[in-house]
Image (cartoon, rainbow, N blue to C red):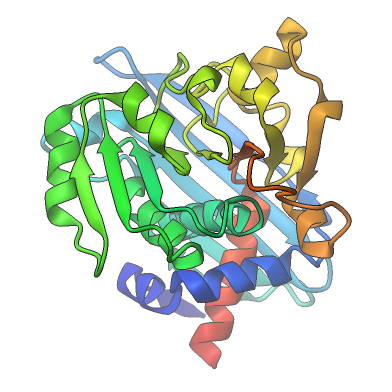
Length: 316
């Protein structure tokens, strides 16, 4: 059984390679994928979350991610990331444990790779300006992953509720040939952006559909619980909406739960998921003027696919 460190995960899961690996994974079927959420209140008023995300491909692989989300870590001076965990990978034919993997690094790479895979099907090929909404641990990985599939991006703006954190990210992230700057005007930046990626803990919409220009691509990462939301109904109605998986996203994320309950959006309005995009049973972007929306809901199946690809890299 291998013990895989975070440094190894980041070294082996380069974003161009991971996107291709995730595309290939979506040609395979998933026999079972589930999630178990446990919550406890924190003194700050937010909740700590313990997630268990198992997935099973019969006669192939089994895996589970055990992960904690302590949002206060980003602000309490502990120096710890808000998301931490481990991943256990097993052989699906004999049940042998194959690897225990740093779950924090795996989550960062998997999540950013998921968004980049969606963007590779949906974002304009000539996208030049990206807006990163949120400046937490996910933000630099989402920026790097989107640039891996859209190297035409030459300017990145970063917005965060704390302007100092947005500025710190802009100062610390150096990518060759790319200008990265903080912005305090979310609306103005969103109206200009070709690609908008959101990774926040917002419970009220930050991005309004009225702001999206023709041809924009909106990538929604942060809302992983029903009460969380990063865009409004208008964004969902104006755009062609895609998601990574129907079986994980529809009942668990506020981007879908809330407008479906309100009657402003229907599951029939969804244009496709990554399984359909990878297999060519639905089309992605159809014209330069279309607005596209991609919900990155995650899920244990994506962790399993990323862990399998990582093991292939380790062995190869």
